[in-house]
Image 1 (spheres, rainbow, N blue to C red):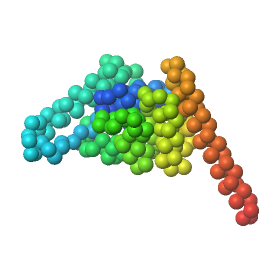
Image 2 (image 1 turned 90 degrees about the vertical axis):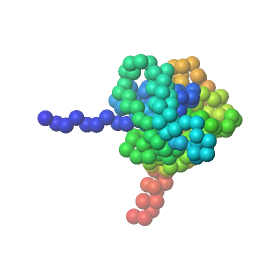
Image 3 (image 1 turned 45 degrees about the vertical axis):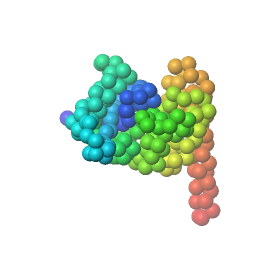
Image 4 (image 1 turned 30 degrees about the horizontal axis):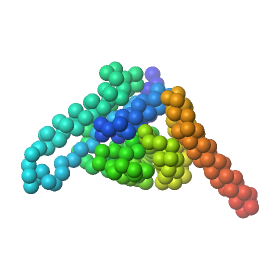
Length: 217
């Protein structure tokens, strides 16, 4: 009897705020399309200040993180998600934790801004770190306006290795469909335009490589 192939894995960063809930919904929709399972990850760490003025202990932070994760999954996906969801708590700073969790993932999905990010930032610190350091394609999901969406997509594309561009183009195409279904037409158009731009870059790069190879023969 042939062994069953493992499901693809989509890691979603969850901090309980609206952008991360939207990221979790996006990850679930992508999982339905691809037969993947979603790993919902909440990272937590104990700040140094509690050692000077102890008010919470490590167990308190772990309990709060578990409550945040469970509540966010329930709010975003309901009590009985229709895709496999694995929840994980990681004691680490969020950006580092997500990059480490993505080591064996096919896709990492994060919100454009997380807890502690300053209003008005285009691509949040955690999202920016992930796009620069994750070992897999990264999709940054947002609830911002169109201008922020354009900036986020372009920063996202520029930050990632060329080898990830085909998967990124496919993910952005899926995102455009999902945004259109939600009636977010301008953002859907932005996503598909960025996907088309990536594909054009890949075609141009392929032609350039073919031309160089022909001249070398």
